[in-house]
Length: 177
Image (cartoon, rainbow, N blue to C red; front, side, top):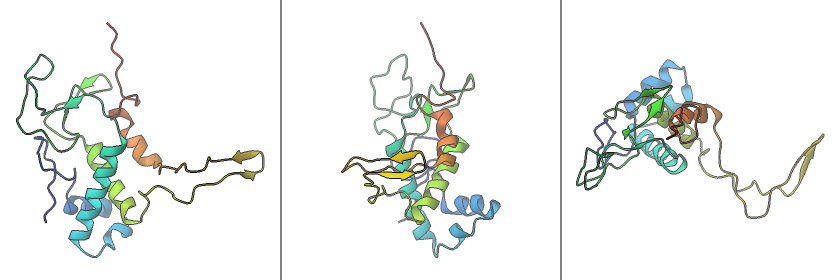
């Protein structure tokens, strides 16, 4: 089944923010051979879906979805009988004091989907099932995890890309009444 890529219109069946062909170009421009080694487009599309699903589950975004099922209110002038499948596009997102248009998906979101797909291809998106360390001491630093607590993956590059778009991220505006 062909990957349905969000085009900024709030598709009700979108599965990712970037196509396999665009991910190919993104990684080729960065001389990344790991992505190029994935044997076929269907496999790449599966990883793009996984990366998008991980991003959708992990982040709490600024603003509201661009298309929602509402009665129509001051805040939600655009209504739809079929809500969009993914979190983007969004309304009321302010980055560095600028209100973003709600008819597009920001480039950072698209690129983060590609980066997370790459991590999905290497198995990095799964929680670390072995991170049940009870005590580990290296010099003056001691790490101790409670039994049963899984360690969620953390990707500094992706976190930095997405921080301005998340609630509490560096680009989030504070509005006081």
